Length: 125
Length: 374
Image (cartoon, rainbow over all chains, first blue to last red; front, side, top):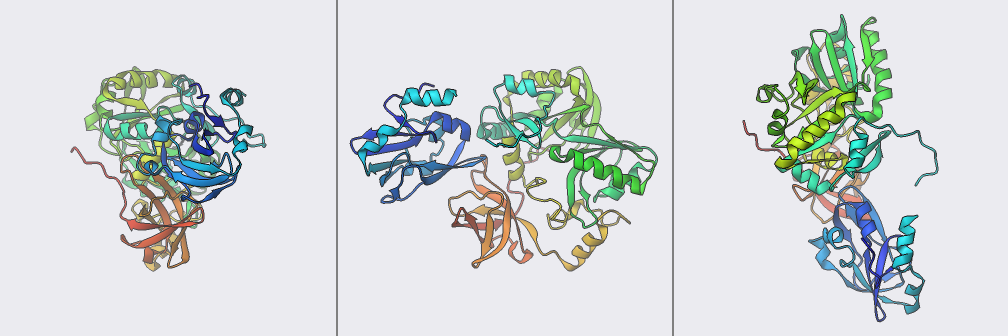
């Protein structure tokens, strides 16, 4: 799979798509492949404050538990509640299945993240 | 991932076949094993609805033979091996003098004075040393042979397993009862076929010489694919066995838990005169155990995992030994050691899941029981 160029990526395998001063956050195709079948996603409540690089939730596959790391700092303005019933969407459509929307504390933050080419280069290492 | 230089991982005779099938390989008990091919959920469902093919060649085999073989087996295992006829198998425990587990195992009676023990992969060296020393303390001149490298073990499991396997063998499979075996050819390879498994489903385990493993594996895949068989890895093996409430050594019991505490009193030969751990187990049977393995189901949306604390009325009362979200039942289930007073179905428990308390309730085991055809 080639990685969408409208997303920015972290080395912890999250993606973020910027919509004005809001960032839409999910995990990458590589991350979902490593996890295997996702069965549960634990997310923060709307209003929670995220800090870039810090854990903001957990994602569980049948076999393993992983932490979700915030790509940017900011306030959670929306949570994808459909993941409660359809966590497998993370596997089938990783780059369309978002987890939280974050109002960025400093909109410049996302600029430091990798673009698709940079992320593919990281995966190739 | 880790800085320590680990010993090189061992490979089963089917390693190249797994890699060619695109399996995700992981270290398990010192072996490089397939954890999944198409995905744990798909593999789990295939076993419940059609068939799955597992390489379990990492399991160990130890043979005990010669005059006094039965006496030696009786001394080192909890179950009553004198009940076995030639061709029959029993589930048993390799016990310490404290009635706890060195390992759990299957005991095959190959001949009048010839037994084969199938043991866990991660404990082969420990078990072989233990079995050799303890068997010879009962019967000094009994032969104990580690044949782990000689055999490949392939499990075909699921409601269509018999139909698929029957296309490759002249052995009358319907005549093999649960926990019995027969010798014969599979795909032209001489081996042993048993109606056993670790999935809670009907199925067989096929033991063949290591050098012939690929031929048998490929033949089973080719014969089974049109009927819905897919290769299945250790991930599905774990979710399947847990759904069927089958214990996993190292998770659900070990050298700190007795056979009775693991709620496996049915594999204790209570009428046996002597075996390692007999006094402790009889004592526990009379006086009761302090902890027992109980099954639970999550009430809150969360998944309990091995090592999570179990609480009742704010007090920690036990520890989760296995837990997962099961693909077939679509519930988060698990097993935990709790005091016997908290083991009755309906008892409310709380599981500490990374600092958050989630509600669970004790339920009867097994969680899943297949419908019997016959």
